[in-house]
Image (cartoon, rainbow, N blue to C red; front, side, top):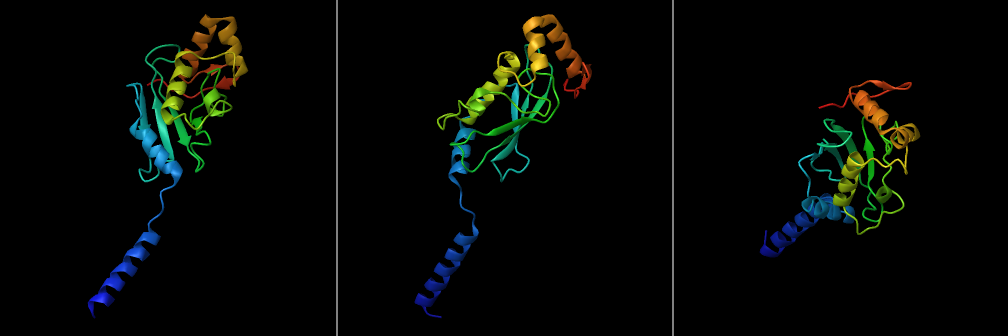
Length: 180
């Protein structure tokens, strides 16, 4: 085989290998950038069940103050290929008593909905999530009963949070044990 044929064969092999290699999407590039810039406090951890897939991961939040101190809360984060033009989908995997989380784990955080802007990052989402556990917001509730308790009687709300975090019930609703 002459040199020209060898070069041509190598070039064709390289092209075939490049076609097999999946292209990195804009969302993946942005997520990689966001992840390198994350400034997680000691009360938060990320977990990547599939390290090759950065668009789907978990967050573990362990508040060290406030009503939810001592709990361990697990969230899934799913990022669409349209990120950062579309907000990540964040969901709590446990059933908890919180004004800003419904019983299915949906999270009421304005930057995950109408206030999302492409300039926001994963860090902003995680800071917002952490803030919800430090200062639950009864004025923008998904769980209206918890919000009403927080507004009317903070002591009762605190008692209900503690009871629910132990895996107890509030009213007719049973909650997952989340105490670490």
